[in-house]
Image (tube, rainbow, N blue to C red):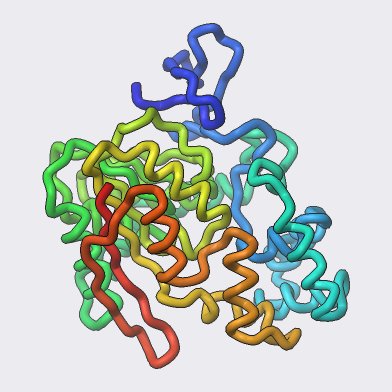
Length: 340
């Protein structure tokens, strides 16, 4: 058993439909064959990462935003985000104040839900939809067997991840399943792929891909900066945009370094510059690209490749290779390989 408790790394054992510490004091549920290895009170769902920072003092506002989206009140999500920011904060100056206060927070104090394992009906519905076999076929063919820059990028990522033989790989961010499908396609039959996502519904993609490709994929609902795995467990850790679309990047990379073996590899697909992901939220309030990137960096989010290199280097993970892919004139991705 390679699973441990997410915060203090106590050994876990399988007990009926849950994972428990040997003394029985800590227990984590298994729902639809997915272990929910989140710290206590964490809601197994994800929101747009920048919203969690802007509304960290108003968590109920995030619930309201996504209730409107699910109800179809407005189709443009960014329009909903901007309207709610205007309602609560109004001006750029007030938004800057919430960023400044967030900078002072401890990593452990993120926005939480009522209780760990509280899977919503919407999450269960989406999980079942994503688990269907045709979805695994769609993810594999759409992402990996097409033509053009997007498909070349996924294919190259998978080739780098799988170029060294290993019995298990850890992926951060299952998401829509593009990275999962590409790695599964290229990995050997005797390799296990552990794929982690904080969104329970996203993990349904792993089941669909596993059924279609007939590869062993183990979905895990967990938080990136509290990975529930023993030290030095994986020779290879990888992610497609998992850093771009997350928070607490420094702590996440510390966890990556912890679970990597000596000489282990970390392969990352990321945007060269995070502004094009975030500008729709901040640009209407007058934030420039330079201001946005500084805010992202100060708030411990992914900002750019230079910052990624600095953090990895400080943790003993050295850049070995990098290949760039230009999706269009504004968006450039790179596949980076680091070695510990």
